[in-house]
Image 1 (tube, rainbow, N blue to C red):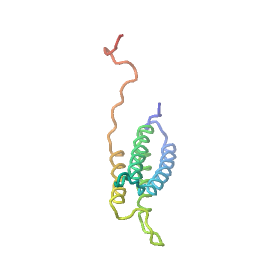
Image 2 (image 1 turned 90 degrees about the vertical axis):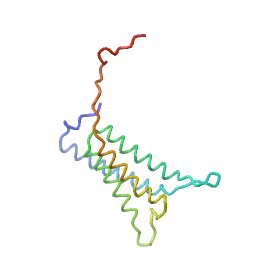
Image 3 (image 1 turned 45 degrees about the vertical axis):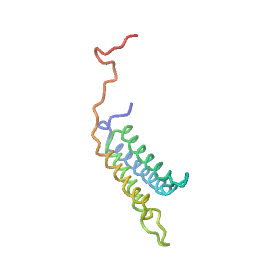
Image 4 (image 1 turned 45 degrees about the horizontal axis):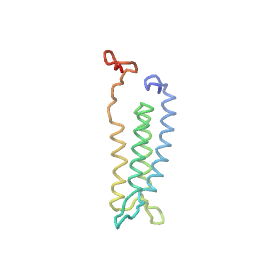
Length: 140
C-alpha cells in the first residue's frame, strides 16, 4: 500500500519530484524519437510509433498518479515530458527536426500536453474501504 501523500515530508516529495522529472525527460525523448515510425499494410500507413508513444505516455502518467498519489510528482513528470517534446521539436543547427510539420507531428505536439493536463487535473476519487462491506457478503 503506498504511503499517503499527506504524510510525506517535504524532502521526500522533492526527491520524488526530481526523479519523476528525470523520468519524464527520458520518456519524452524516447517517445518523440519513435513517434514518426510507420508500417505500410495493404497500401495504408499505420503510425505504430505514434500509437505506441501515446499509450506509453498515458500509461506512464496514469500509473504514476495511481502509485504515488501526489499531484506534485505527476506534475513534475508531465513538465519533463512536455519540455522534452518542446525541445526536440525545435530545428537543430543542421536544419533537421524530429517533429516534422505533418499530421503525425501535429498530433504528437498536442497529445502529450493534453494527456498530461487531464491526468494532473483529474480529481481524486474516494478510496473504497479494504474490508468487506456491511450487508454485501456473498455466500456460495
